[in-house]
Length: 271
Image (cartoon, rainbow, N blue to C red):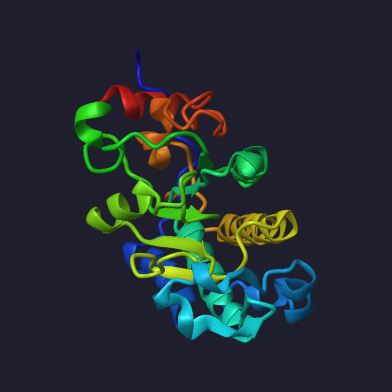
């Protein structure tokens, strides 16, 4: 296939040093994407994020995040939830701003459609089915060379259908892939890079999480799109073409980023 002509020429002023400055400058700002204004403590309370499981189901590593116990039910400290949620959203925004691939993971059947719709709305990927072992640790054998792993995994629930830790958490830790996860009082937060203590069973709480992550990712991508020197660097389809999501195992994710982009097709054919 003949190589397609290149797009609009980038200005000569777009030096690597300036490009790197635009990518690293947000890191020096404590809240560059203003994620703190997306939610309040009352929003968390109204969504019943503070409701945990019975005291007998408590995981010992979740005790620092528990405010108290009422009628044999653990109550999560929402002040800590706010801090951890802001950190998680801020990190997610930085990954999206730098053109990273974000994978939403959930094994709860009642939230499959919600999680997949959230991923599709913000242009990312979702995995809500059975997680086959080796999808991350053995990807180069299962999908061939040149497959790009996700840059961030977002767990709306860290447990599978039999209340065991999700296999993807362990695989992501082995591959040094950062993770963001909602951890209830019966979960182990140790392997989660950015744990969010909160209720992972209530539909209102999960809807709030999905809305916040969707708004955060869209806000970060919009801010990157408005950067004139970055619009031709890492935001196009070619930079995300050899992604694990295009191999077909993500099922309900958004359309392939290669579709309709001749330059991206040329880049993939050269692998």
